[in-house]
Image (cartoon, rainbow, N blue to C red; front, side, top):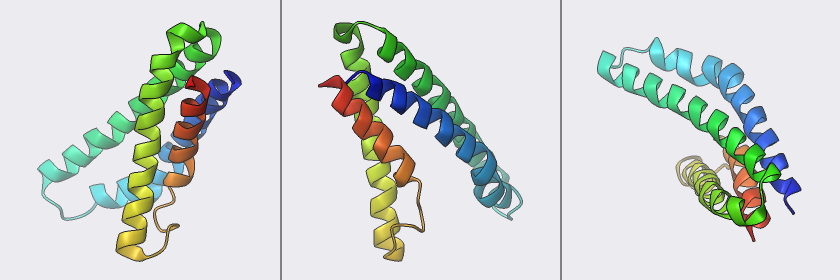
Length: 123
């Protein structure tokens, strides 16, 4: 089952690429060009780049968990698995509640599988 850590790490890299390329054009750039107060725009920019770091560090942690002894990697899988599963669930829930359409905010389609793979790998 440890190969699921490898798959989770690869999905993190893929999510990072989608986040940087598509997300920047569709979400970040319009927010930064909006008339929102500068402090809010800079806070959103910081959160955006913080998520970039989360994807990079998570991928590194998953690759380490794949290579490490199971007893050492279990906590990483459980922690990151919960994070990604809950984060995916948040996007799915908000997309459904606000738009009644799960695909308006499709981020959950990448985030939830990362979490599921990590949780399965850790059991």
